[in-house]
Length: 220
Image (cartoon, rainbow, N blue to C red; front, side):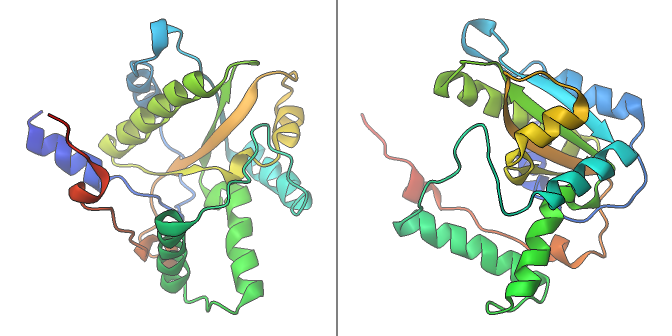
């Protein structure tokens, strides 16, 4: 792979929010997961565990989370109040998404319905729920983020769409109960993935990135 190939791969990855129902071949999923397992981590502790949920098991899990909508209790608080440039970027993302879907700013019903699609993994045939071991903290969560990004890029390399979703971690007790998992490990994020539906309006949304000069300070 050339540097140009890698650059194209990174830029091709984006958040896909509409999927075809067709399942992905198990060997393709395994290839992406095996690549992600090579993500670096502090002292090689590899602080992540993955629960792959597909088909009707995923649809019924989505229905259970929808039934709980409005009373989230995530393992890791999601209550940061963005201000300044961070708030501007957050608003820009929402404008791009809701604009692509034709949902007006004052259309509360439309916005609620759009958000609730998150809890069904946007109808994707598969979702990976990524857990951090009990009592692990920020350092290990950063390593888990590296695993997530590597998995997303591996899926992109396989020609698949994906979306890392904080919303899929809002109801961890529902997820654990549905999958028969014990309490303990912290649900950090869910990743919807599958074959992109190019006709879904949400997939027309595009976000922008900060220029290099706005993010990097050079010393020496």
